[in-house]
Image 1 (cartoon, helix red, strand yellow):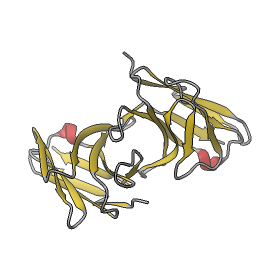
Image 2 (cartoon, helix red, strand yellow):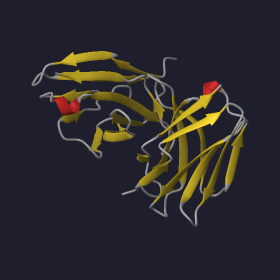
Image 3 (cartoon, one colour):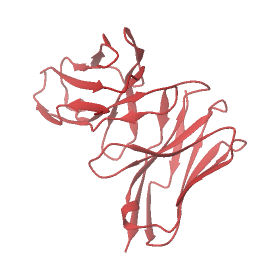
Length: 113
Length: 111
């Protein structure tokens, strides 16, 4: 099955700086890579995703990049704000066309004012 | 349109008790999932369903059971609660084979 590793486990950034979280996956057939944001005591919510036919996708201050050769994908948050403080999870399917996701262990992002 | 709802929000069980965690969706999604989230950890898949009448085990199914008699409902049953089942449980649904939408969660403590 798919094995997803996520780094770092914690990240503290100054407000206005950028934050980058990286995930690696093991199954080269995986073709869908979502990122979820979970605020304290809340449910995980999808913030951005990318499919294997593109290398980068952007939505306002967040972007995701995918390197299929190296089997890693990254979340980039620019101009961080206090409301970006949360736990972020990456995920990948357990194989091509598999609807079950494997999740990374999460990154706790703290934005310092 | 409530999306995905879960009941109860919180529950404390004694060792050996049983309970059912309810999950209901009104989005007409075929795919439904149960996850558990332990403190500081990611989400582990317990059971999943691709449609009414079809269920299958995920990564950590021991101690749990599910049923899917309708598209809307996907209850999770704990028969003999153990302290190791203390966790936050999330139900999720998916319209297709990728996107998943999560319910608000049930926080369960077994003492």
